[in-house]
Image 1 (tube, rainbow, N blue to C red):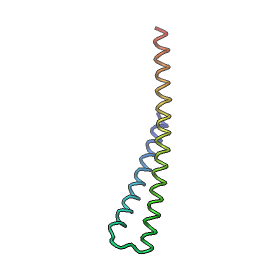
Image 2: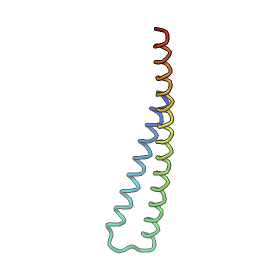
Image 3: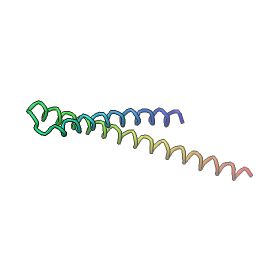
Image 4: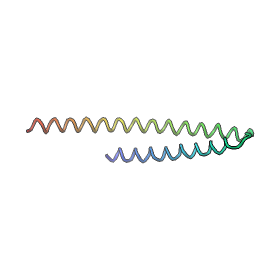
Length: 85
């Protein structure tokens, strides 16, 4: 359970970062004309956002594996208890 909580905290941080980058992109897009510097900033922000989303996907996969393992443990415990009765 501690691993789940720790991973959920990491996912929350990654989501916060992704939303920050989305806000940055949105602000840049609202400006009508893009200078070379602004276009570069949009590109960099998009790249960072893609990285954050990728990291988030990895954390979600880790959580899925943890939950699957916990579910299997519960099933095994339940089967052992049923066999003892």
